[in-house]
Image (spheres, rainbow, N blue to C red):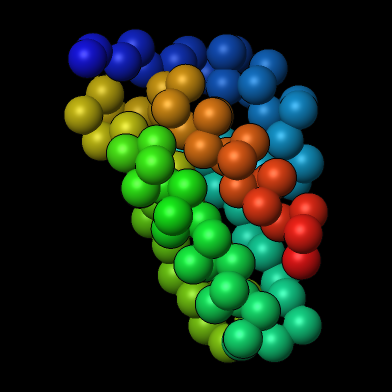
Length: 97
């Protein structure tokens, strides 16, 4: 399945619906902060299951209660609809925490 890399304008239009996500260096990214490490890790676990279900995996880092997520589609060389869809799923997961 070939995915089309979105234009900067298409990405910015999509990001209007995603609170505090930013477009930088061919990725969309967001930093999340939680009450503690246990909560951050619980969210990461939920995201991991969703990412596996979508067969699309984030680049992320976790330090204590902070999670930084960057999404892009390596095969397309930038952001595609897969990244936007996963970002929406991540937002839905985060509403529970």
